[in-house]
Image (cartoon, rainbow, N blue to C red; front, side):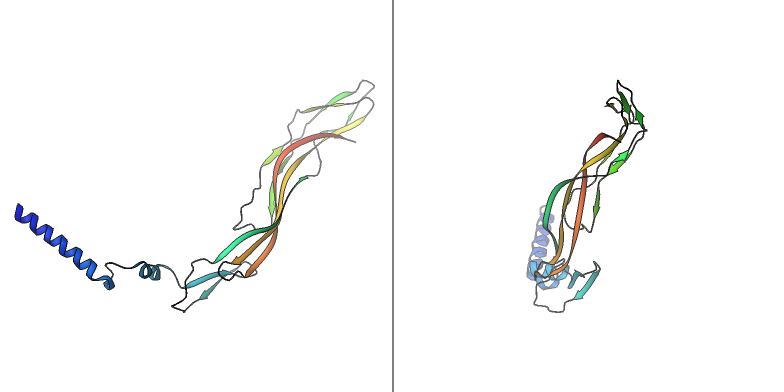
Length: 189
């Protein structure tokens, strides 16, 4: 038993010595050797139309970058806007005592985005619906109907696509992102 243990220990030590002694044969490699074998020499870039263009690099001494394309936001503005009013009830004509009018149509508004937003972080979306049965008071001797709209939180700006190595701007486009915040009812003539 003791002889077998010595043989296994000797074999293990010899194997470890062989691995350390043979670095160029692929058993133990430096970090640079690993990077050369893992990183592709093809640099990927985006042209002005948003298409991907492959550029071959044959320079062995240059540093290789897997993805030099970066994105950033500039000229960012935050503001509030409103949708158009949409009719959600029939007309109501009141007498000298006035009356109440109820929503009898359901309309829905959703958030949206326009322009390319790939690579940048923007918030958009959400939706609000008018509620059937919501009631408003109408004053005396009037003919009115109910309308509904939503308030949007809007972010607009410019998305810039640039090369992280050279700093050269590859493309730019404007974007607008709308998020639904709240809805409101009103009376209209």
